[in-house]
Image (cartoon, rainbow, N blue to C red; front, side):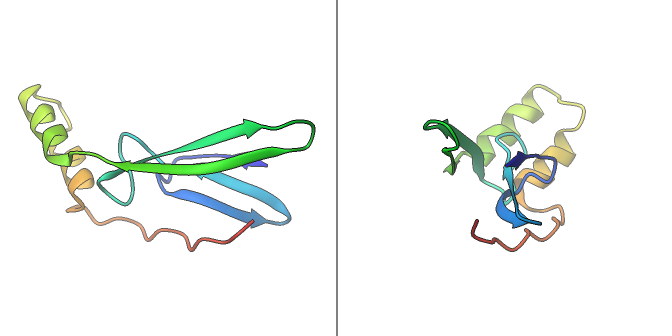
Length: 96
């Protein structure tokens, strides 16, 4: 099992017989509006489970807070969070 990130998309698929996982993102999630994370649980020798979770969040409140704080990249982050900035297509899911 390999866990990686960077794409901000939740992924669970087999690549060359190896399970590849991406937890998603809580800060710049894709798709927008749902913070994603990965829960790994060790159930004993050779028994590791992985569960993706996501929860909706108030994008408008985050954008307003970025603007209020005069975040230097507020416009870019707001465009990503609202889906106004073009996103890469999510990888097609594959069962492990």
